[in-house]
Image 1 (cartoon, rainbow, N blue to C red):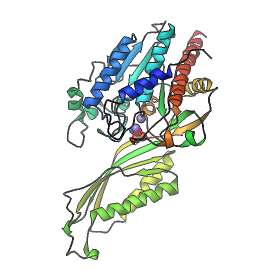
Image 2 (image 1 turned 60 degrees about the vertical axis):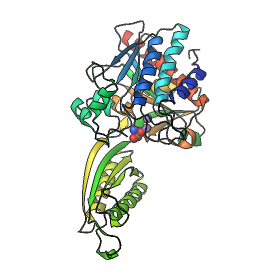
Image 3 (image 1 turned 30 degrees about the vertical axis):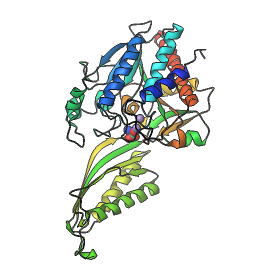
Length: 411
Ligand code: HGY
Ligand code: MN
Ligand code: MN
C-alpha cells in the first residue's frame, strides 16, 4: 500500500465550513437542489478545485466535472463523485462527504506532487435527493440515459417552479451535452445512513450494490362532509382511508422484508371541522430484489382495491430503480484498500448516484458509519476519524485502480 495519507483535519474543516451553506438552527443542513445555498456551495467547490489545479466543466443539467490531469492524456478519467444537495431536514454529511473526500484526495496528491496515470474527475451530481424535484438521482440518471433532458427540465417543485427555471436561476448549467462525460470507473464514498457498521464496530462498508426502489403518488377521493352532523358510518373519509393504507403498507414491508415509507401527505382544502374529502400521499417502497418489490406493489394495489365503494383511489408509479450490482474490479480495489480497516460487504438501503452511474461505467461505493445510523435528520453525525478513514480508502482505491487498469491495458 502507498504511504500517502489524507489530511483528515483539512477534510473535517471543509465539512464543517461548507455546512454553513444552508445550516439550520437544529444543527443540520437544508440545501435544496438549485437553491441559493446550493449555488454558494457549488461556487465554494469550484474555487477550491481551481486552486487545486483542476479544470471545471458542467453539463447542461448542472452536473459538475472537476478534472485533475494525469500523466496520460489518452486515458479516460477515474471519477470520485457524489452530491451537494440535501433533504429539507438534512445533515452535514449525506452526499457532501463523498465530494469533499474526493477534493481531499486531489489535494493530498497535489501536496505529495504525485500524478496518477489516469486523469481524475471529481463529480457533483445535481438533484440526488429528489426532495425538491422528484424523482431522486435525477441528473446522474439523465447522464446515464434514464431520463431525457426535457423530462428533467420540466420537473416541478411543490411551489410549481420548474427544474429548468431553478437551474437558470442559479446559473448552474454548462454547455456540455448530458452524458458526454465518460469515466474509466467511478467510486462514491458515503455515510451508511443505517446502523450496521456502527453496530458491528466496523469502519468501512464495501458496498456491493443498491436495493431496488419505486416511488408512487396516490390520490384518494372521498366526500367532504360536516364533522359534527355526519354519522361515523355514513362517511367517505379520504384521510381515514389513507391511514389504513399506510398501516397496511407498513405491515406488508415487515412481512416481505422490505421498506415502505409515506413521507408526504396533503389534505386538499384542510379544515378541522370538515371530514377530508381528498388527500394526496406518496409511497416509497424498497426491497433487495425485484420479486419482493413486485410483491409489495401488488400488496398495495390489493389494499387499495379493498377500499369502501364510495372512495376512489389513483395510484401512479412515478419512478422505478431496480436493484443494482456494482463492478467486481472496483470492489476488488476497495477491498484491497480496506485491508487494514475493519470492513464488510453490504448492500445499500439508500439510493445513490452510483446506482445510475453503474449503468454506464464500472462503479462501486464505500461506506463509513454515522451515529446511530441516523440520516435525513439534522442530528446526522459522523466522526473525524471515520471520515478520514473513508477518504483514505477512497484515495487508496483510486490509486490501486489506476494501477490495475494501467497494467491491464499494457498486457
Ligand atoms: O432516497 C434515497 O435513498 C436517497 O437519499 N436519495
Ligand atoms: Mn446521499
Ligand atoms: Mn440522502
